[in-house]
Image 1 (cartoon, rainbow, N blue to C red):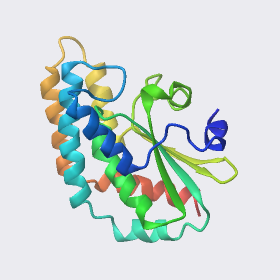
Image 2: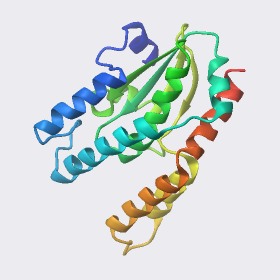
Image 3: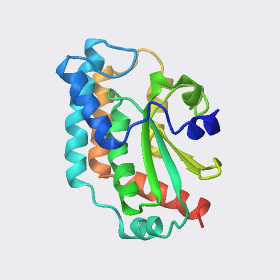
Image 4: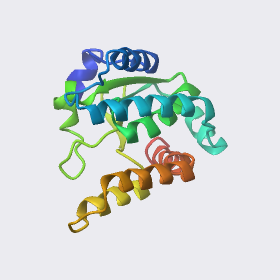
Length: 203
């Protein structure tokens, strides 16, 4: 399934600039991407646009990660499954974008989760369609690695919240905890995780 997608030149995929343009367009219509067009998702989406803009300007990659990316000698596709309303995508996608910019051997393309269920269903997390998901593919359509939907410590926070007994803490408190973690982490964990993955799979 994924091999056929790549062979067809990623129909419906976007580069990062096109993705940001799409987000601006749907926000101008008070909408978001994906199937859920609730007021809550639209509000999440607008907040995420501001987060991505800030991260686009402030992210600095670790020197060791940059060196590892520069060492990639073979062309590869980095495919990211995302949606505008997803807070984890807003926090993590800009780091992946910065990484791909380091080496022109990496082609980065983005697809929307709800428009590509056949791809999303290959990369479920505990049976759920959690995003973002980064999938790296070589020129022979072999998967090199995948990562996502969020750094491991953040994943633990999510799992612990969903597994907590009723009555759960208010969702607003959970969202605040998530944001505090990302703010304090300053992208260090995702950078370390992806550097480790690259070292293991692309050496």
